[in-house]
Image (cartoon, helix red, strand yellow):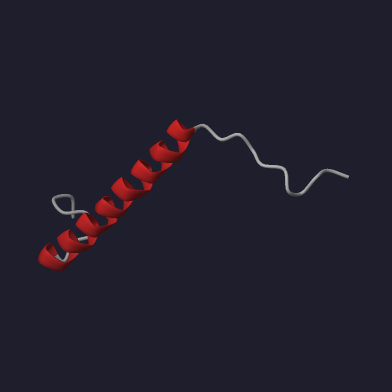
Amino acid sequence: MENKNQKRNTDPQKISAEKLNSRLALVGVIALVEAFIKTGQIVPGII
């Protein structure tokens, strides 16, 4: 049976890249909601 307390060696660059990716995704979601509130269109300019 494997040791459940064993830590993985995670690259610090991957952790910071994932944090940046999640923050940029949240910025995109906020921009999408703001565009929907202002224009009433889900994708402004297309419909």
